[in-house]
Image 1 (spheres, rainbow, N blue to C red):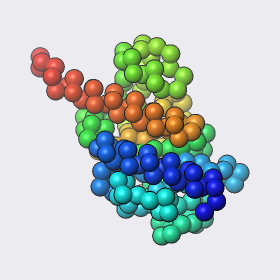
Image 2 (image 1 turned 90 degrees about the vertical axis):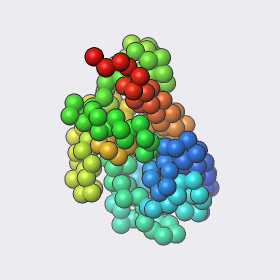
Image 3 (image 1 turned 90 degrees about the horizontal axis):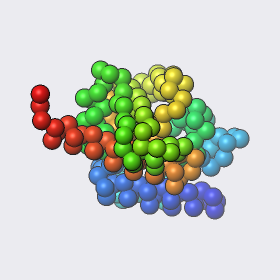
Length: 210
């Protein structure tokens, strides 16, 4: 394992364990990646079926733009590796994170008919890249989940092009995808979105019904 991969793998493991501890990637849920090179495209990514709270650096795989280029101990990347590649290509992301929190799962179902969730008025929005005011309106698209990964990846591309200012999206009854220019920014975006989604969910619970 070369130095760049070793350092990135260690960082992905630390982030994975932290997200698991916070209930955002329990069991075998969630998947996390980081760009190692762009020409040719190469990503470090978590393996399929791994407990994110018990992950080791040796389990981190590398994938190319074509998944046949996968390298690693078990050579089986996350089933959603194609989605990571699409986000990197469409957004120029340096890291892509997918969490499975309770609140992102609930709200992705509750707001599915609207096609997304509008988040506005919260100070925490300023944690998203380029956002300077709590008055920012963040549209978080919701995409129907599918086990047909090539088709789902193409749908993700379409949504990202349709909403070029979005910082993430939800898969219906599945969870959150967000990204950043590097690992630290992507981690911050997860923390911001998970805070905001939990806040929106809790507001729904405590608001009096009319």
